Amino acid sequence: MKIVPLEAYLILSIILFGLGVFGMIVRRNLVTILMSTELSLNAVNVAFVGADAHLGLADGQVFALFIIALAAVEAAVGLGIIVAIFRLRKVESSDELTDMGG
Image (cartoon, rainbow, N blue to C red):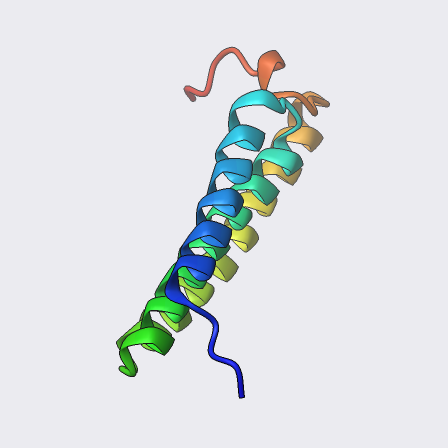
C-alpha cells in the first residue's frame, strides 16, 4: 500500500483554500460566496486529516468532524439568510446589498 506524503495533502489543501478565498473575493453572487466558504472549510479538513494520517493520531479526524458539523450549520443558516434577503429585496448580488441594518 502506497502512503501519500504529507506534502501532497498540504499542497492540495493550500490550492483548495486559495480557490475558496479567491471565490469569496471575486464572485458577487451570495450562493457562490457561501460555496466558496464551504470549499475553504473543506481545505482545512484535508489538512487536518492529512496531518492525522501522517502522524498516526486521531485528533485530526475529530477536528474534521467538528468542522463538518460547523459547515453544515453554517450552510443551513447562511442559505436561510440568503433566501430571506432574496424574498425581501429581490437581490442576488452582494454589491446590491448596501445596508444590513434593521
